[in-house]
Length: 61
Image (cartoon, rainbow, N blue to C red; front, side, top):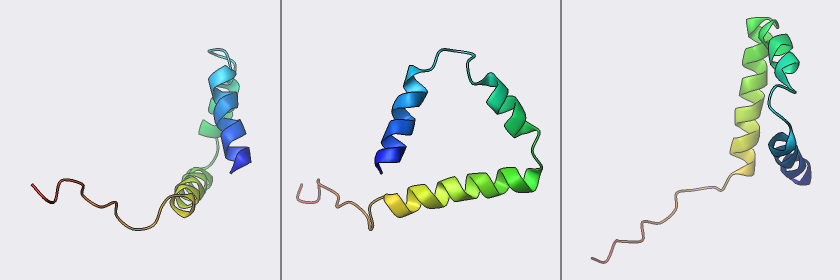
């Protein structure tokens, strides 16, 4: 979790245009590799997220 927080902070501290070459290289990867990366990211977010549904707070009105 700490690594994800540091990555989030690092993305906020970069200057515009500094990581454009990474986006260009990522766009040149095969579609299967891009899909695997997106799938891995979504699954990671799902694992780190809360379980269940938050209760609806206005149930008594």
